[in-house]
Length: 248
Image 1 (cartoon, rainbow, N blue to C red):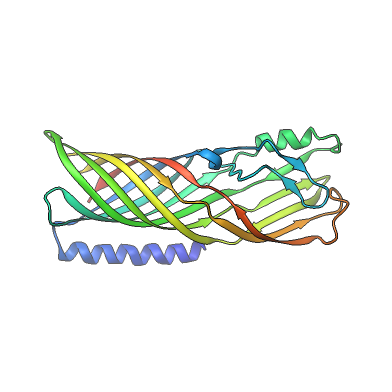
Image 2: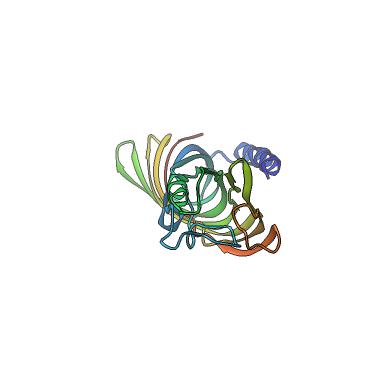
């Protein structure tokens, strides 16, 4: 996935450079991102968590484990028709580490656990690619205010999960990357039409991940096989994004 993203970003940068060379009214914003997971995506453990006897670890329904993350993005703005109205095209790379401290504490307190369980829950990667419109108003000298609405697709990578017990890998879960719907309303300010600050709410829908689960009989004694298919594990993905950028 990472090689494909690199190729995509190179092609995108070439495309934007060519457009800017042909139209001086366009601008491109490049920005850094702080991402705050909200809702189920931010939950660290569910009320129904358990160590099953033949299905691995159950963290609870729709638990994302996501923690505060970071990212980068670019946004193309093309003025259209009405003064202040612009068509936008954007893409972002959003990284969110996971926090497994609560599941580690909860599962290590299970009466069946006599040694330490160690969890590795990886990092989320989301790549929303969207298009939409913004409308801007001049507030004060040098200060402009914008409202924005974009929609599109999101390429989502759910992190792999591993659990080790007494130096034995007792669970390993891998998910396939998938594409789902994305929507993002936002408000933004700029100074001298150069420096920008935005608050964005991004909803990346509730993708249903497929994948594989390996579990070991050392901790799950009633399994009939070590390898299972994951048919449709749903995860809701929502974030607040704070961005700071520069218009070129």
